[in-house]
Image (cartoon, rainbow, N blue to C red; front, side, top):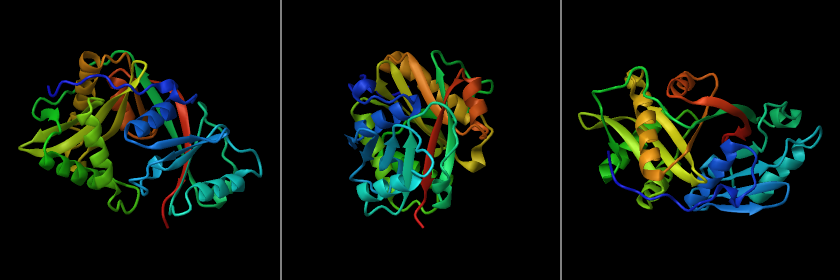
Length: 273
């Protein structure tokens, strides 16, 4: 199926985070080279070589601000990231709770995601047998990865952060920390995802993306299943983690492959404007 790899050394207990979604997010950012600073009641996650990566440059709050405290956190973000054109705040909670009014007034949107886990994956109900599933290796593969991400990107102007993010992913696969898989047809990349060892037996899925013209062909489920086999056989993973929009159709694919909902993940962001 691809290139042999060895498990990464990053440990989840390097930072004490209750949210499994954010624990694995932060572990991945550290693997990619991000700096994490503990301020006591919040963490600063900073990706110096990709400042336009919102969720590579954010604050993770230990708890949701109380009434009247929202402006203080906006000021802290501005102080930590004075040149940032975005705002990104995560909350280390495992339940869906009401957001402070100041966040909405400042134009921040709330993102309520579902954290799903699986100990054992199963094949999707409609596996795709036509596409060639393999790791991304060559320069041409990774150029196609960026092109596909642009097609799937819905956060406004992607700028060049997608290219920088792809470079970080490629470097990570070369260390043996995980794999970036693609589904190809006639040499064209139609779908992709990543799976990375984040320590303590956990493996985190990243960015399941399918070209809009190739959806509903079983590509995503096939990639999820194939990556899960890699995680078991090569990384030695015992628990798989994926984060999804509860309203998106993709969550049905993940459930069909054996994932079940475990926690909620709460974050707030405001794109550059």
